[in-house]
Image 1 (cartoon, rainbow over the protein chains, first blue to last red):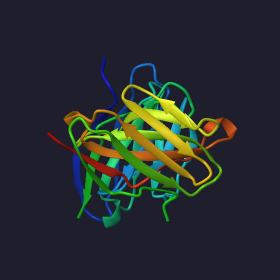
Image 2 (image 1 turned 90 degrees about the vertical axis):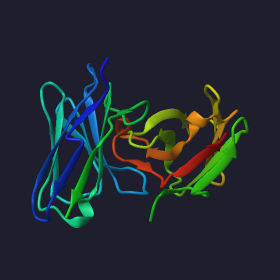
Image 3 (image 1 turned 180 degrees about the vertical axis):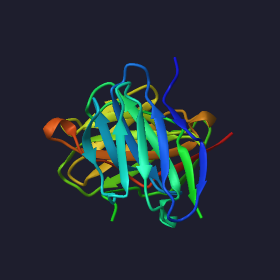
Image 4 (image 1 turned 120 degrees about the horizontal axis):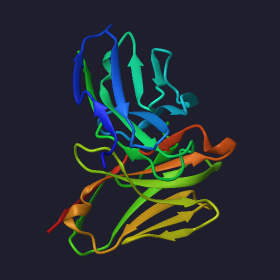
Length: 114
Length: 115
């Protein structure tokens, strides 16, 4: 059975551009969470979506937005990219709405902003 | 600053020895904690969790200890193997309202296992 998949695996953008990252959860999972992981740091929570509704939001600017589709896949959008947005973006899925319990992470999308 | 931190950024152990990875948290309202393992090029992988109404929980070769008095969390790995080499993160969550909100990760400890 496929795990969480993310696309693309790597991405290079320039400052001011926007980017869309995609995530497909494990089949049957209705919750998707997004995290930003800067090199040498732990992941930082950005958003959680459950049943297409936003359930939680971390301390990120409005340039970051996300949505969840009827098939429970999700997109993370970042506008007006800054150099500091360079990071590994992780998606995690789980069965229910809680962030507690086991979340399954994808391999991430490595974003480089030049 | 970070709500969850680690005492040791790197830890090197001999294969077969036990490993202890430590984590300090600062938010006394946190009532749920998780340990994750992240191998190079992969996303974090759930290891074990513990609620604040417990002080110890055991899994397969792993034990998590929680000391709420000093806000300290540790992960013990028995008979450490080369496959345990990874970065380990602790994370905390504050309860209430169906456990929404933030899952706060620490900076991580790199565990290296020497054969």
